[in-house]
Image 1 (cartoon, rainbow, N blue to C red):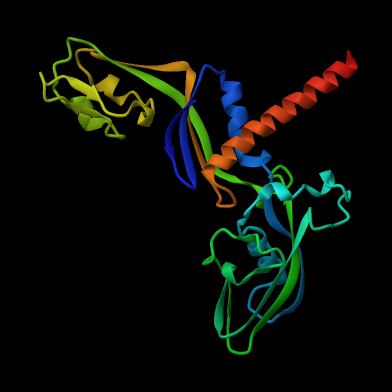
Image 2 (image 1 turned 180 degrees about the horizontal axis):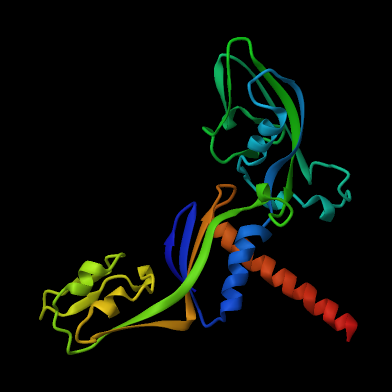
Length: 264
């Protein structure tokens, strides 16, 4: 693994020496297998806004929620209480507001001070003069395979790393530079030969290959090296999401191994 870029909400890295199935397993785990927090159930006591209760519930359910220490929480079915409800598998939340105002995600209050919304300025509802909103609910930990509101990753994908080869008979005409949509080709100062600035940003479109009259450019995907790009919804950092995805793949592989051993 070779790191290319690491931010709070994005990670780009090279994954080497693996099959496409493994790269895809990491991608799928980042999308739906890593547990995250989300508002699961709510009880609405007063809602005189223009939004129906169902619309309000949907907006609240999709608000990204993060925790200072996510390891303190358990998926309800895997909790010691068996999903009956305890501080280890659920957190209480409330939302109270009176217009005129715009209700934002930052107005949500949680029973656990270690739990908070990832973004405080997500609009929930606009309340007019005299309109009220009063509700309470519970936040639980679960996986995106159950519902999209527990989906930790957003834009997660991979591609083969290209091997861009420039032959010695390159004339440096610059036609390929003009057609490259990612602008990764430049004409070097020394000798005017074509150079590649960032092969990880290549989309393998091969427009440069088609444009070269002398056939000096060759673009070949490296079969066992992948450029992984993982974006998060904000409920956890990209670093934690990728680490959690690897742990989930390992956990599921161990479970499969144990089941096969029992059958044998």
